[in-house]
Length: 468
Ligand code: B12
Ligand code: SF4
Image 1 (spheres, rainbow, N blue to C red):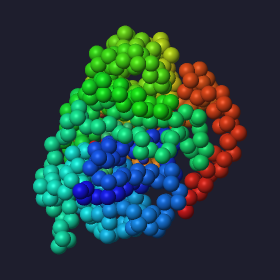
Image 2: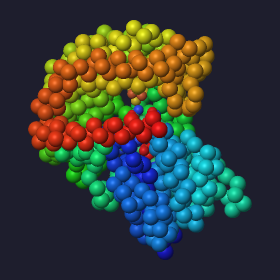
Image 3: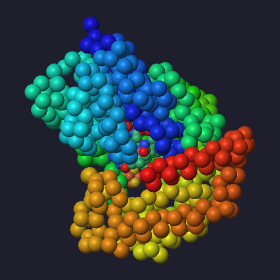
Image 4: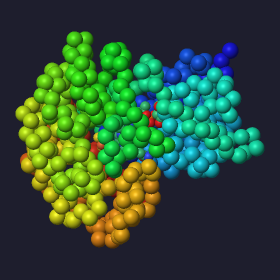
């Protein structure tokens, strides 16, 4: 006899979002579904980005009242957090509601307060915890769980140990009803479909600004690898054309990365692979060769700053010269290279920030993204910001400003970085390169060209809404 007959796994995010975010499935929620699906009568997975009728909480509530006895919601991002809280709080209070995810874990008390219909918050990685909930283990015995008692008080059990990822089932894609692709303002930008695969959790490095390898409870996630055979089994179930390896750094263990590439080639898995990496990968030319043969086309590389002083401040463990040497190697092959930068660092001058686009062109990056320095709840950088006179942040997860570089100044600097890097020759280079290496097709470009008016209209509507 199962405790729950029909569970609903809900990704509550919809509305304006960047094209990139529309491209990927809700991987964490799919892990949760895979862990509980054999322990409940039935599971339905709803991703509101693809369910326009259910974006109305009244319509969704009707479905929930008729069908559902367990509602599982994933709350992962800082962005749109308040909108998500508004939405969730309108869902039926009589149905058992459990939320989890990175942001939910950071905001446990607030969520209970804000959404009176939430019964439980699962803190941290939720696979083992959700299994215990659905099999009827008394709440007081479930580690990692915060729950509302009958009297209304909130109980926080002790933390759950991190699950062993070698035994966690990978996401079951058979429950998916949609293909994921890049959509911006209702316009599909490429004919490719997208998916993510997670082959490791954690990262052995300790860059000061980064909380990737810390779970939202502030626990360091030790670097752990899934068996390569299990990754290959999962890849065989993926139908998408483009796969993002969402590991913090796919090449942390180059020997294993090489082994995975060999197995991808041996099993004739033909995909376009995208991976997050550090510049260290340039030290392993054989792995790079294998990666190219296996279908890796795009690397997302954390560079953060061109300045040794700032790289040191961030504990990135690399120098400007090492970045230059690495790119001299990486640009020998036909990979698309995207670099991440951070600007607005402590004591960074305007001139130093504006060197980012020049440096990016010198090392021949194809594209860049640049973010203001941010402070996370458990990031070691938080203390540094708090101790530096003239520097401040208004909320956890928010940007760092200073007396000299406030919101307005940093916005002007951001616009200049963007304009100086993305000039017309660079845009033409990006179009040519993405086409040459197969990231977009000629048909995609023609389609995008004809839909340009729609895109401009979407952008204008968004800008107007922002002003209101
Ligand atoms: C890959 C990734 C992306 C991908 C998304 C891929 C995808 N599938 O969605 C892309 C590149 C699109 C992306 C974008 C962004 N990301 Co991101 N991303 C990641 C990354 C590296 C891995 C996510 C992942 O797959 N984790 C593995 C899964 C298994 O873990 P999980 O999602 O946390 O789920 C587990 C638990 O949270 C829990 N859980 C989750 N949902 C539920 C639901 C229930 C009911 C239960 C019980 C449990 C539960 O159980 C799951 C299994 O263990 C994380 C860092 C990290 N290491 O986690 C950052 C991270 C999630 N991203 C982050 C950020 C800030 C962003 C961006 C805002 C960056 C930017 N400026 O553009 C954007 C914005 C996204 C948005 N919607 O607005 C932050 C979020 C911090 C915050 N509090 O907001 C993180 C934590 C990194 C960081 N520390 O800065 N990201
Ligand atoms: S920035 Fe990259 S290398 Fe540094 S700790 Fe974070 S995930 Fe690891």
